[in-house]
Length: 107
Length: 182
Image 1 (tube, one colour):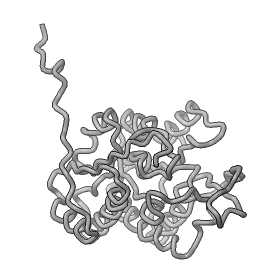
Image 2 (image 1 turned 120 degrees about the vertical axis):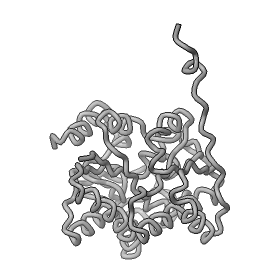
Image 3 (image 1 turned 180 degrees about the vertical axis):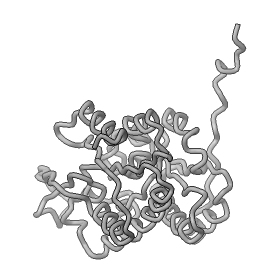
């Protein structure tokens, strides 16, 4: 049961993609879980991904839609963290094509 | 030097709020718009309550969350946040933190209190009050920063669930934070 305007749609987003995708995610009503920045020490990154996977597991357990917009930086590590919690791998977020108005040449 | 904002998880993901607590479908745009306007890099912190109590947790107040086990959980997450914060501070970045002032966990200046809450999940009339002080996670993050010799960033909390919430006051307060006036 949802008692508020939440979308129940969550995108797990690579740090490198977050800024560019933010307007689109906002307009589509997605919440976001940010993946860690690329320059982290491996053990810190692994622990960060472990808590991301815990968040994802809880959303999926409660029938939220969770998708992935990643850049490949932590693909294997995130997959491992999800598998450890028996969470299926996430479907890829479909980035929306640019508006056709932006493709119309100036006259 | 980059400008970096550590923000409460739910600012970027309203789905993490306790049921009934989300004010938007996905994100709390007023803060995100300000961060964009002022050129801040976003660092989303974990949601300790979601990970601990689950998506269907009950509303709670500070007295219910203030247990040794919950503090250990918060400290585990605080260590991660502090690790990332350390990198930014070492690089000379300008770091701020934005929490949620109606949260027993992520409150910065205020958190909710009700000494009698407990038992049957039916509080009747909400008699909780907002009291001065940090939420449990913010307290643990401050302790972790102290242990690392890391300065705690200047900070504030969003107050969209305050009874007398004033969006203009909040915008001015957050802008003052982002421009270094506080």
